[in-house]
Image 1: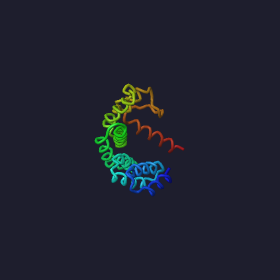
Image 2: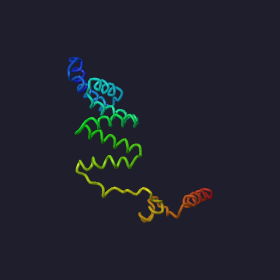
Image 3: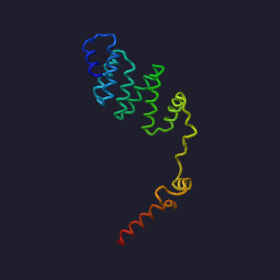
Length: 169
């Protein structure tokens, strides 16, 4: 596909569709994990008036862990467009929130996306993340590591018994 897009770009550099061609080429380069080349194409497409190139620039920033830049690009798309393009930007914003550990923001962004897709996962989401190790042992009926949790001194006693066993051998 890249070869054909290159040929098309060479044959028609002043085409009214050059922005769309550059956008498509950027997507193909991104798919091939050629991130710097994809960024160049997306920026060229943006200069040609192809605002959807901001989606690609958001993906480039996301790939690099540049959360602020990815958010800025995707907010611009979401606020300026409608339909599938805006929905794609909303997915990106939710992914940024998740990767930054902003779980409340992630839930706020992801819930409408899942609802639009016909998925209702509210009953499967565990909202409690403030359980103590003792609470977890009681809920699970034991420790997944095989150690009975007996309060905060458990780790100290466990380490002492392990080291005592090594000292005797």
